Image 1 (cartoon, rainbow, N blue to C red):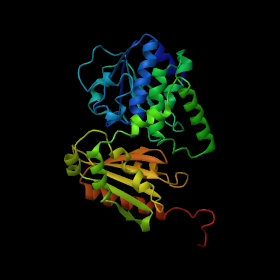
Image 2: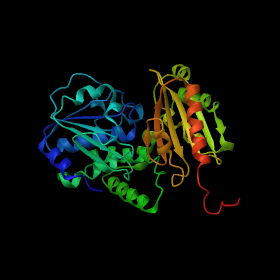
Image 3: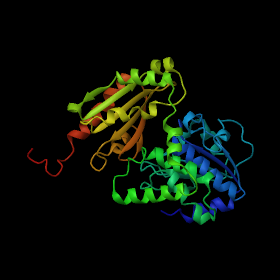
Image 4: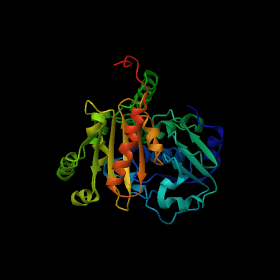
Amino acid sequence: MKAPPPLIDLLLERSRFLITSHLRPDGDAIGSQLALAAILEELGKETVIQNQSPVPDNFAFLPGAGRIAPFGDLPFSPDAAVVLDSPRPCRVGKIERQLSAAGKLVNIDHHISNSGYGDVSWVEPEASSVGEMIYHLLGPLGVELTRAIALPIYVAILTDMGKFQYMVTPESGARIFRLAGRLVETGLVPYEIYKKVYNLYSADPLKFLGEALTTLEYAAGGQIAFIRVSREMLKRHGDGFDVTENLIAYPRDIISTRVALLFTELAGGGVKVSFRSKEPERIDVNRIASRFGGGGHPAAAGAELAGDLDRAVVRVVTAVEEYLEKLPAAPGEEGA
């Protein structure tokens, strides 16, 4: 994995950077932003990080997380803007208005659905995460790996790889574990990081989990399992640790499930849909999500649909059923 020379040249030549990522940022978005900012500041650059959405509580422990600002006036006029982990610039929400003020637009992403926007674009669909890509900037930029850089990169990989579950080949698994080992050598304690990222439940989110699990449904003879989260449920149980990010593990881990879905009504309207495949080598949920303007990876993808929750469920479940019906038989299944 190698960053393109035009990107390295731009990062070395420019002095003031705006860094942003997609709405409702996950661990990869937050971790990649903080790691890139730390790397650029080692080079003496000025950086500002702005996101429309706040930092989720379970990533607030990351060094520098408190400096991630909401949309607003910039402390300086950036001569470059870097968009991380976002297949399209519109996914950054209001921050898109700030991008035109920058001299150059940089697009760093690992989603196969990325549109290739920007003056400089680096898209690596084989990367585990944007965090992994940020790690590979260190050598060309001449920056040493420190604990402050390693920690957000580790969290980026840990979360986007589903606690290291989404490594579908021996080659990718070996590569990612080697990198994780290098990060840990800076003094990271994996167990402590895991607790901070995943064990931040209080009583109310667990009540929310219980209510959400009552919505569990099946389709395609149990091959599809899905949960729906209404706007009313979210209002009742409040904010805090975003338990919805982990809800999809429950339908996914049912033994008959091949595709798991999580439907979440958004406060501003529309529905967020998360997709998970138990067989990414055969069932590529990125392809399904792309039918709805979304994308991601074969094992995990997402999309946002306009309209109400019930309509979104019907549309997406029908699309997954059609996809499964068209799958060719696997070796050994012929004639079964």
